[in-house]
Image (cartoon, rainbow, N blue to C red; front, side, top):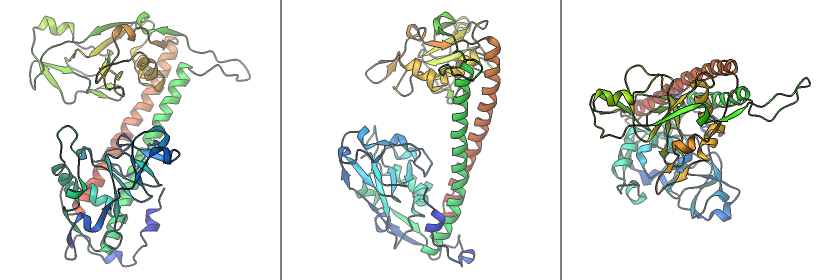
Length: 411
């Protein structure tokens, strides 16, 4: 990781710099203090270098946490150098930009931005670009309807207020310090996700039998899901902004849970609604979506009356054999998702997994006592993860708020 504090070359007079006094700030065109680096490269010539696609960039994060290799992709790409900013110029409203910590290549749908250090510090520029003012203009100047994209010829003319270098240095130090707390939160989330995966494997005994010196640890018995659960397709009906019954859809997932967000509604006779009312412990399975989202699963724990849409499948387990909470954790695990998506059939724009194929998925069925023990432990990890994610979200919001206050625009 880049040592940003060392790179900033501390100024002993920082404490007396007026952060909110903008008398020395200058309005400049973006192209006066930053360049768009358009160094093209063929993946075959960078097969062992890291490759960063737009999907590898996290919204609101200045760090690249995922990447592939040049050998994984085809088509001309852009080269970036350590310290450059990889900016998602396509769909700028997603607020995707990150500082490169090593050299590599990236999608041609990104823009590689490099600071002109005589005018703007490389450590300061990412925060200016993350600000609401910059992102608002980026969205406004994007062209195209399906995938709005920013052109450098337009962006370079946009004007922004730039503080003197000394002030940039102080501001950057403060904001990178706040960013460190965001990074810590993200690292904790990653650690908890790994812990949950390990726990899932431990309690379902999905590993090969291991010799402990005393006895081999037997693998968990597997059964087809159709042998231990019942299935029902959801309701097909017109949806609207308000109505008698809220309808759960494929966007109503929050990790392992079904969430009441962005709700749509429908009206219908009570006897029809009763047939599709979701009960606590029901698992809702997303049977059709893009290849990376099909097969999402969540368990229903909400209070109140909710129905479910036609592209979801309700799964109700035989609780004398398989507890729904245990099944939900398994189907959300990497093992479970791989098992489910093995039955996905490609469509024109979406993949599909029918209830008939879902019944063929093999799932672990340990004893009820083992399931209860696993659920108790996994619930603790999941609760810790939700708390950690909330804290990280708060820190991200705080960082963005600081950026906008310091740069003169309220969020």
